[in-house]
Amino acid sequence: MAKPNKFIQKLMHAKTFAIRKSVVFALVGGLLLGSGGVLLFQWYNPKDAPQASTINMSMIMSRIVDRNELVTASQDYTIVEKAGDQNKLFDFIEIPFTQNSFWYRYSGTIEASVDLSGATWDQKSENTLVVTLPEPVLQNVPNMDVSGVLEERNNVLNPIHVEDVDEFQRQCIAKSTQQAEEGGLKEQAKANALTNLQGMFDVACGEDKCVIEINWVSADGGEQGE
Image 1 (cartoon, rainbow, N blue to C red):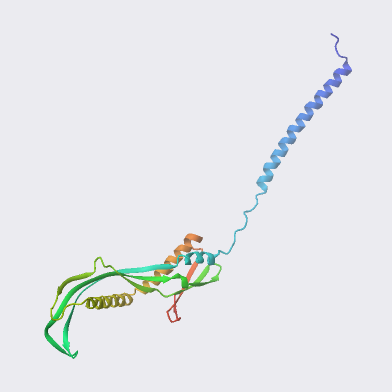
Image 2: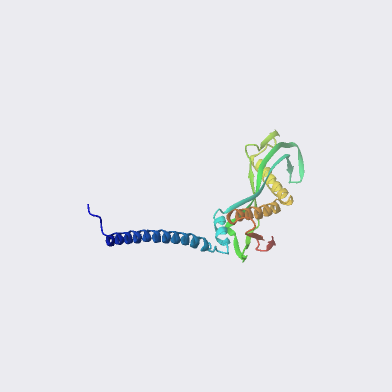
């Protein structure tokens, strides 16, 4: 077989060299592009999208108000007393042998609750919300499973009537409610309400992000302060 002449050999050698050169250039170019892409990604690190600097505290409060009533304090009580009655002439002179009596135990729970439906609020600053609330209301919830007559001394001349027991129950309710007020149950309820509201905002916004202040308004519309 005839060997190619020198011109053809040179031409083929030049072509092979050109192909190799192109491959080398392509590899080098690919490396440069790849390295440049990595460096560009490292250098160009876009900042996170800015978050809203002001927390929508009003929206959070609206959702809390949707729960309506907030029970903030409660206490149990038991009253055991003796009640009795004696017939009187002209409501002044006691008639002998007409005395009746009974021992009664009255138990229940007094709840101090805040009606959130009457709440109003205003964002005092970027992270402070002032909430105006009606002062806590005391509700007396009797426990009739425990309450009842323990002992009675009836009298045929002056029998114990249902209305006598009802009147005694009303006295127990009034007495236990007065004791709860004098014992500071409302003040405890106010402190608990602030703690509960602050806790809800801490969960929603993060601790130390929001500050809650409460203005209490009495039934007659006068402000009671925080």
